[in-house]
Length: 316
Image (cartoon, rainbow, N blue to C red; front, side):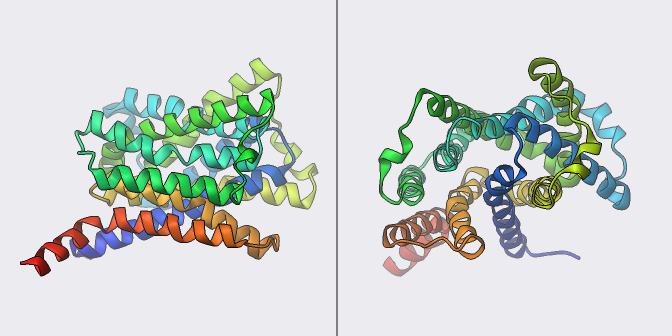
């Protein structure tokens, strides 16, 4: 089935948005899992990698996992281990030191990082609207996550470690998202996501075991409480397998990866609504204002080109 370019781009933005929804719920399930961030990384990459391998075997177009490794072994391994695995490990570890609010706020700098990385690697032009919308959306995220009380971002020396780790996660993620795009276009999102989490697990399992002395036993999963069991499984299948496939496929089809990545600014909004519906949290007036501001800035960036063309057309 051949899709028009406009339809494909719309579907790409929708897929990327659903991927962000997966990202937005990950902090909830990490906390509910009841285990440390470094151990969560092993569980998430192990279960996610297993689910993705099964998906590859079911899907004929992604069944051949050998040829891409023969054609591009170094980029695939480096992006999988030092890009996604290391970045997600920093994210999970940060939650051991800092609050969800602090980590979620700092991670939202990633779209701004993508703008500059895309400029360096792809030569993508950094336009004034992109800078204004990026900074505006980031400030909106800070306001949203703190409910206007920015002192929540301050804390002890431990929380400073978590904040630094989360910023490191954002920067590593920015480089990964730009550099992985051509390989997603070449080999498909299912195979690239499978490489990412399978190779990431192979690197993380012995590293966590040797450095932290945590050797994850898969049989321990069945001895955990129902909430912990469900949270770990959800992290592996939904937050890892499904969400990342949608996210990478969407970004690979959006012409400007930096512009598409601005959808990541919607992550705290989605997380807030999840907290409202699942945890019955109350949404304040300050948070509603922040939601409108973030949505406005993201919408401006995504639709800036057609809006500017329409304004020029009406001006003529």
